[in-house]
Length: 99
Image (tube, helix red, strand yellow):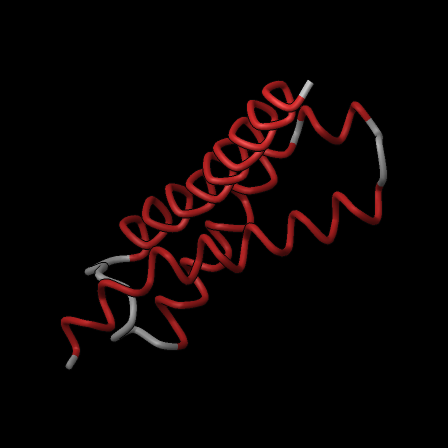
């Protein structure tokens, strides 16, 4: 059962970061300065989530030390940004096809 928990940590952190950044983006609005820092904010939120998971629920993250948890968290946060861009580009292509 513990092996399955290790598999779910990266998508869970990515989902938390994705929705947190979406809420922040909605609150800030169309601020172009904020949009430039979204990958950095996502990586930072991922790092925080990775460290929190490492200390609070150590069986959920596949890390032996805090440095590995930081790397896993940062990668998960950047995964959230990449997922957002994939969704954005796919919806943009569909909008261009309709015109």
